[in-house]
Image 1 (cartoon, rainbow, N blue to C red):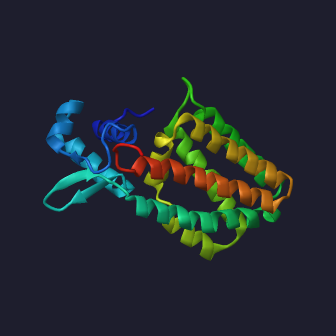
Image 2: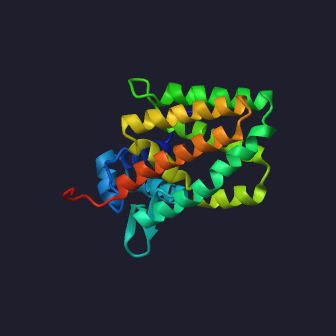
Length: 221
């Protein structure tokens, strides 16, 4: 395997610090401070911040440097409102179009997500993200509705979904993983209404996690 470069290693470290919660949303990311913390020069840090800005995890503010991207509660609710309006319907439309190979592929993805996502020593949330993206993408593709798929794609921000997995409490994560398995069961049974209902629950579960995490800290009523 090729050696990991300093820039790639720094990119991975800064990404993990953000996704792991070491840097809260809105936190300023100083090049000098990061370089000292990671034991590297400012050059790989600058490159990492640029890459993370392209991914959406970091915002580069002119004359003010970089900071961790943040979403307001209203922005999050808007994203999940749109997902809840479109994705369950697309899932229902995918059911009658799913063949044996589609069911097999979705089942394999749901199983793999459980393997890497279940809380425990083998958990790998970063590995969960591409599997989840492929699962949802397969369903959307099966639906055969490019206009709806395009509208949905505009609402689903990859960094938001990735951070979502790092924000889940154990119960919410187990619930999310079980939803994928149940959606496959609904497709195998040829039941669009069942599949749509589970996808609706799946999105509302994610919404609750992200909105709760975005709420300002303070005394609870």
